[in-house]
Length: 88
Image 1 (cartoon, rainbow, N blue to C red):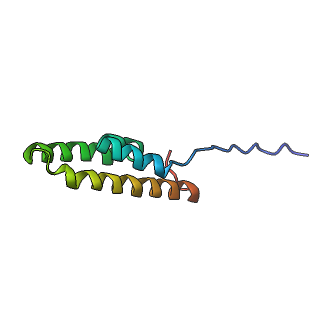
Image 2: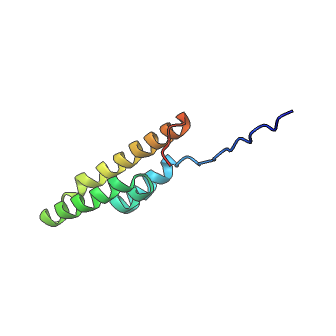
Image 3: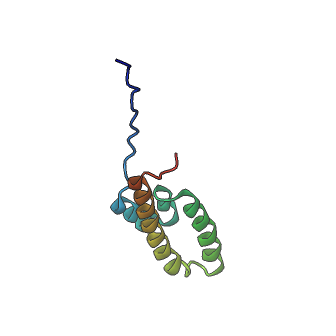
């Protein structure tokens, strides 16, 4: 009887939508680092430049965009993970 090859299972936890939204509401683009690193870096730069140009008024627009982006990024991450298409 031949030895069966062992199957390896890699367990990767999903990201929490609530944590992503809470971190982003509290910390803005820095909180997005939990959900999406490239998106957070982009929003840190864009949000910072716009905030300087508008004396902070643009945060009323960029902050909610960050929250929505974080929620979408976590949803996409969890969807890819559960479908088995996650990049490592």
